[in-house]
Figure (cartoon, rainbow, N blue to C red):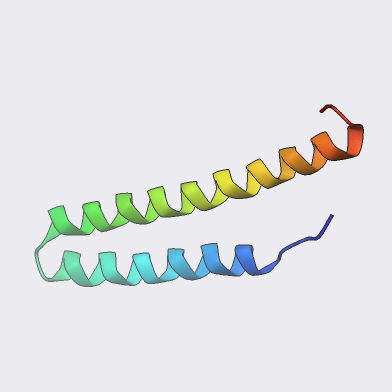
Length: 67
């Protein structure tokens, strides 16, 4: 199985960027927009994790020949 460490760094990078945008928007007084940015960032990361889990389960299925 090919371990992709880049995905971990991508998720961490998205988290840092979302945190910075959230802080800036909150200090500008746009708390509603800040919350929406956080939710959208969470959904993007969730889709990335689901994609990685899908590839993991396909790999497990191929290893144990559950086809």
